[in-house]
Amino acid sequence: MVKLLENTFRAVNIGLVNEIALICDRLGINVWEVIEAAKTKPFGFMPFYPGPGLGGHCIPIDPLYLSWKLKTLNYTARFIELASEINASMPAHVLTKVSDALNDDGKAVRGSRIVVLGVAYKKDVDDVRESPALDVLHLLLEKGAHVVYHDPFVPSLRLEDGRKLTSTAYSDALLADADCVVVVTDHSVIDYSHVKSTAHLVVDSRNALAKATGSARVVSL
Image (cartoon, rainbow, N blue to C red; front, side, top):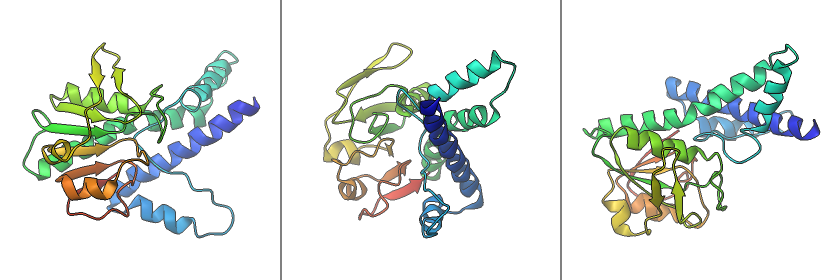
């Protein structure tokens, strides 16, 4: 129960900040600036950050186990289920951001060349269990995009539909030829100033390019 509390605490707070990101998107406010400002309060606030969804073998799964167990006891764990619903919706939100960004360039998702940077469930690991990148890749492919990914930690992966993808080598051409680069996992080994200087359009779901220099148009979560 101690572990379930800890996992649920993070899942619920990530769900809250993901909903704040959705709210800020509709209000035209930068959610990352809001969080940075809220962090200046010296007590009573713990920063959590939005993203493309939850991954790993604990946070996305363990709270749902607790929710399932409670249903057998005729109790609905409402915070857990609502947080799960919001967190599970974030890959679709990333797809919407990509679609809108391409539309602003007069392009459709179908037929566009899209590069996904990072597919592990969190930065600097090789673990893709429950990674939201798998959902983002699937949604983009389903919409007819020509999708490749680059992840220095994940040489290959298999989607739920059985498709196997292999990491494409990082290069200037990979970025420059893309209609859109999507940052899904913000690995530390990636030079984001190089990304911003070489790509034309970047959808950044992790705020990885916040301090990067370059001329690319960057669309944040």
